[in-house]
Amino acid sequence: MALNTIALELVPPNVEHGVQRAFDEAHKVVELSQEFGIDGRIGHVMIPGLIEEEDDRPVEMKPKLDVLEFWSAITPELPGMKGLCTQVTAFMDEPVLRQRLTDLLTAGIEGVIFVGVPRTMSDGEGSGVAPTDALSRYQQLVEHRGVILIPTRDSEYGRFNFKCDQGATFGMTQLLYSDAIVSFLTDFARVSAHRPEILLSFGFVPKFENKVGLINWLIQDPGNDVVAGEQAMVRRLADSDPDHKRKLMLDLYKRVIDGVADLGYPLSIHLEAPYGISAAAFETFAEMLAYWAPDKR
Image (cartoon, rainbow, N blue to C red; front, side, top):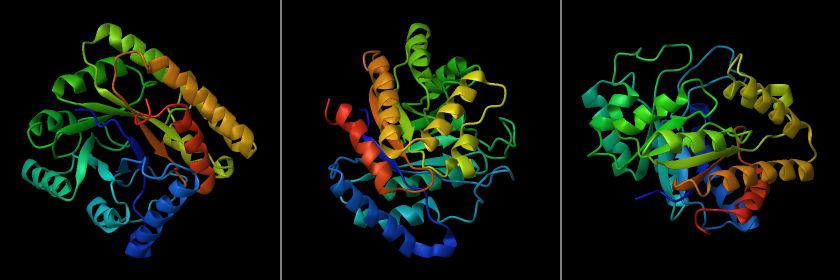
């Protein structure tokens, strides 16, 4: 059974801001959903389990509320919404990871995206369970088992196919600022019998991105010309006035949806505002969902 959902990413607040910030964020989601006509349509909250990464991260990584603590705080404020989360597996041994997954599911997290080590480490490093091993090991425990899909990454066809072989039921894309996912899924459909659900990820770009560079950093892949083009698109979005920015994002959304809708993959939408949710972000999301959404097919 596919998730068939609209998922909104919410990042746990810094520990120093406490649970009150979590309540405030949940209330903001409700208010903006009502204001822009998408009340009741967000099916899942996607909560990333963040860990420290490179020192050059443009926005300092401070200690965050744990996914479970954050989800437990906001779920009463978001009636009807279920949870998704990312879970780093490489630093937990099997019993600890199994208990963690059990706790997440018991709390109402419906799907878990298994992720690996940060970019400063190599695949296979870490003393715990590899993400690909977790996919197969916890098939009886976790119904919706996700992986990250980066269509611009070298050798992604083989990597994604192996993850599907291991038991992945869905792939959540990296933030999309080009239609590279269209050719990727078109070609993948030719070489693989797998048709996992795809969560297509779209992120709002505020004006100050060009000063801070967080999104540019998140999607970086030095030497990759396609990603360089996506980074140029991010800069263009940041420099555009609000109306033109919405048009650019809607045009991109249409190209992606039109290109993948008939390829045989179940589709969901994942929406993200990397700097925090805002009225401008929700206005853009609402226009995109008016064109196509899994709950209005």
